[in-house]
Structures are given as C-alpha cells and as structure tokens.
Image (cartoon, rainbow, N blue to C red; front, top):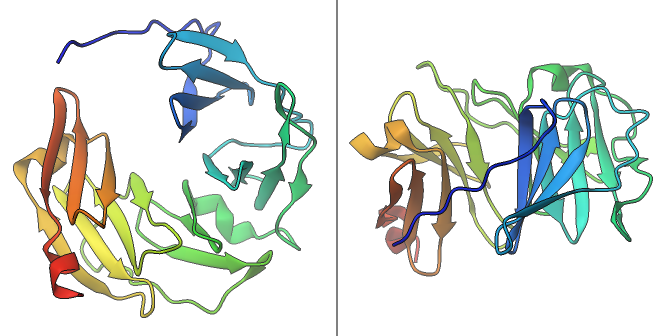
Amino acid sequence: GESKKTDLDLNGQTIISLAKKDNKIILGLSDLSLKELDLTKGSITALAFPNKNLQSLASLALYNNNLYVLDSKAGQIWKYPPGEKGFNEPKAWLKTTNPSLLATTILGIDGSIYAISPQGIVQKFDQGRPSAFTAFHSPAPVNVSKFWTKTASKFMYFLDAPSGRLIVLSKETGKPLIQYTAPQVVNALDFVVEENAKKIYLLLPEGVFSFEATHLAKSQ
C-alpha cells in the first residue's frame, strides 16, 4: 500500500509515551504535556491536560474513555476523566504511593492495572491496591518494550524485541506458556493480538508481519 509520512511539530519536545484510540494517537511529551495526532487528517492538536502534580509520563493507557498515566517517579497512577478538549483534573488511582513503580515503564489495563518493568516484572493492582499476583521473572535477560492484554483474554503478551521473542503468560498462574520467535520480532516496534482470529500482528518499520497464535488453538 501507499506509505504516508506525517511530520510532527512538537516544539522541540520528544515523545515519551503514547496511547491509541480509533484513528487518533495521544502523545505524551517530555514537558509532561499531551498532544493528539489525527491519523486521518494528519493534524496535531494540544490536549487539555492538568499536570501540576505529575512528575513523569512513563506510560499511557486508555480504558473506558479514561486516561491512566503511570507516574513512575511519584510512585502513582493517575486517572484522568475525559474533558471537553482533552482531560479533566486527575484523581490518584492508587490509595497510597508505591515506590516500586520507579522501575516500571509500561502500563496495561483489563479492569486490573498492570505495571511492568523492562525486566518483565509485573505488578498487578486492583481497586487502587496491590494485588496478590506473582508473574514470572525470566532467568534469561528480558527487555520488555510492549505489553498487551484485554479483559476477555486469559493471557498476557510481552514483546522482547532484542531477544527476538514474544512471550505469552497465563493470567491465572502468571507462568509462561509459550514464546514465539521469528527473525522479524527483532525489528518489531509494536504488536496487536487478534485472539478470535488466532493471529498476532507485528508492526515493523517496513510494514506488518502476522503469524498464527498456536497457543489459542490449543486452549479451545
């Protein structure tokens, strides 16, 4: 297909984190502001984003139209309700700040919230409090850059691009079930899982690569 390049005017700021919603991408910038990129129009606009209590923008996640922000420096997760031109004043989602979030860089939500470190250590939170949940920590070096799950899924997916693997864990036990390896994984920027179609799609610099999610065929 035809490729299209959109130049972003970010006033010298760098993109720290992003979240996708329909045909728009919310960009978290290094000055702790938010902008929204409209993929259809190729336009970029500043979003209302009260950030006076924010210390860092490690990761963003959208869930039920609310924006959740992983503030790893403050040990807090902020919940921003939607507003007219962006988002309204946030509430601290965690009941108490959690210093262990300092090492985390990825946020995932399926009703519970997961904060994940690049080493693949997962902390799970329910209703603002830490949950008794032990996820596997690989003895081999892991460099997790992306994470995927959703409410209806029984699995958690971790992209470890430098090692060329995509690791699948059971949500129930926190133990690894399978790891998919392919030369293309090394260059993957992101991934999407279509569990109904039993497919995993890797976003590569040159396009999209898909393969069969064999663990889903087995789990039925």
